[in-house]
Image (cartoon, rainbow, N blue to C red):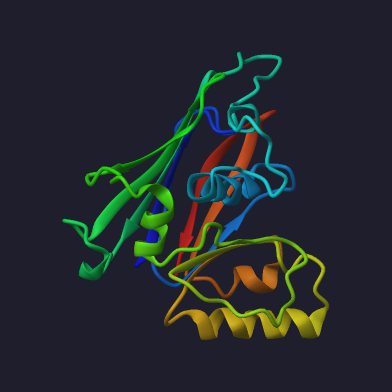
Length: 219
């Protein structure tokens, strides 16, 4: 199983509809500081865990809705959808692809949804268990380069930002070793990693406060 797409609209700085496609293997996400790269990691965490940041707030709509800019109104709805592909039959779904998402509206509890198989009575915790997913497969800065990479997929949010040369080399070896069993999506500004990935996505902010995807390259 792997994460084949992320779709966002109204989520934090992604005011406009945005779509990112992924494939098994090693993917890099790059862009200038403050452009919204880490927002993709927060979007995945929100869908799976119900909150976008490690320091969750009581009302999740307050932390995920696009807050507006001097040129744009704030939005009252946010939707993030993850597409999971290659699901094994043991998961119990009719298809090998599942769209798993979360929606928030102003001053309303957010809701998890699935397509084409609706959530059953066991809810989100049972769903994640069936998929073999952690509540949050996101790893942030401060991760030790020796921590293992495991699970269907992981999102690595600038974990290597402060690694020295030796730690970075070890981290890159880990990424390559994980390729056969774990899909790694690496948010990074390190050129050493950019040259190692199979696919490179970009994020930009042409208008202040509004993030956009940028088509980049595939090996």
